[in-house]
Image (cartoon, rainbow, N blue to C red; front, side, top):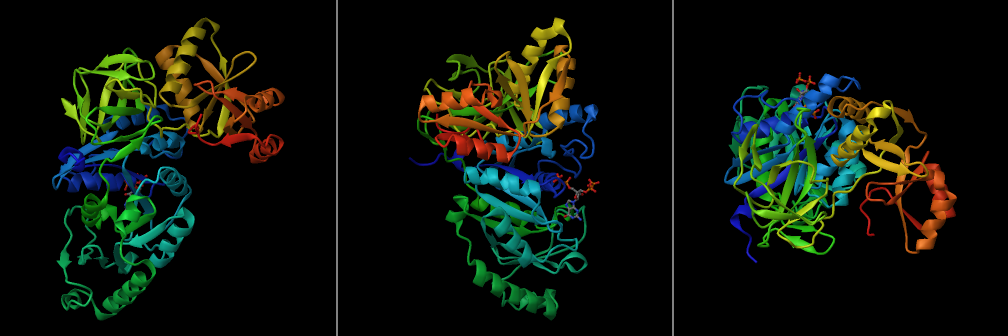
Length: 528
Ligand code: G4P
């Protein structure tokens, strides 16, 4: 089957980083270079204040901003680029993980001063789960950061991925002169100027081109030649297949705030990053170029206006062509649905979309028909894989503070957990409701939204659990046994799957030892 030009031209990806490494700045610079925005500062920072956990206005603002910037599409050199935004705040990590299920590749930003940080490692783990191709951008080269070779070593050891530098810094911090672009044989000279969109680029034949000595002092040129000889010996040429299989990360150096190293990153990205290809469903592999439309919902966003309960479901198209006003089936509910106002996102604009292609993300107005992970098809029974729930780390019991509003509370909790704000576990006896979240901020968001959108009041009682694992066993009896003998540690997730709740790793290991035939899973993505 030949690949449709509309599919081939699409590059759908996310920019990810530990907070403050420069994700927002790089995103903005991509939009600027792609001509999607005219001035820097147009993309608001999509993050709540890192230091506060109870600034509700900030949370609300974040929710507002994140709809506008959830998807940023633009055309660049004949390609359609879709950047899927991920929240910066670590407490929204699960949202980020889910968004990563809808991209074909990522650009990971690393701060040259701080190197690999906690969230960098966690994000990389998620990429590795799906073999998502990763390009690494080492940012803030205008600062006195770590040595380039040390950084590459750190990336390889801490992120467990092979790396291959595609540009190389000349100096660093106050001596930063620019980068040599290995991929395109160019010398890019650095100027500290935040307003410039272009940087002086000198095209050379190779490292021995006499032109180089016109721009670089001999000590810098000699050092560059020595470094590149070493990198060639250690890392060799770029193996694109290994990159596309998620085994090798090309590395670029630059300074996002100074618009430096962005153009070459973007140009190489559109050259080597994969277009939409195939995606695994429970039943079979689905290929982008198949004629019939398929897609899945990876994010649901509540309406900011509490008077309108409709939500926006973000649908990633996987195959075929999505068309406005055509009937599709939500396979979970076997329900026919038609969308008269699907939205397309171009930078900060929303427009009505008539048709969309694999790799695109469309926003669908939803009055409660969708859950995260739902699949839409033209009729085939399919369920896409890859939108797992991750085991939360903070668990609290929900206590109803207004008995007259228990229905509202029930509905609110159900809808908010469907949106993926946090996970709900139910414990027997007594239908005890436990909310599990990755970060503390989620609890603030839930009680605030329950009160403002559903008129329900609740309190959260802290529980000692800090780990959870979905449990399965080949034999039903084995599963029954652990559920009976450890009943105070068993909860059920939204789909009724049993989950083992534990205080710490030690308790999980003990249970593993006591029940050797039970399998423990840290994400909900396991074969049932
Ligand atoms: P994030 O989305 O990953 O959290 O990071 P963001 O882009 O917001 O950048 C974090 C801080 O790092 C910002 O400074 C930003 O200006 C700065 N920054 C980004 N790229 C570079 C770079 O190449 N060099 C240097 N030196 N700094 C860079 P801030 O003071 O927190 O905010 P702002 O007031 O500048 O917006």
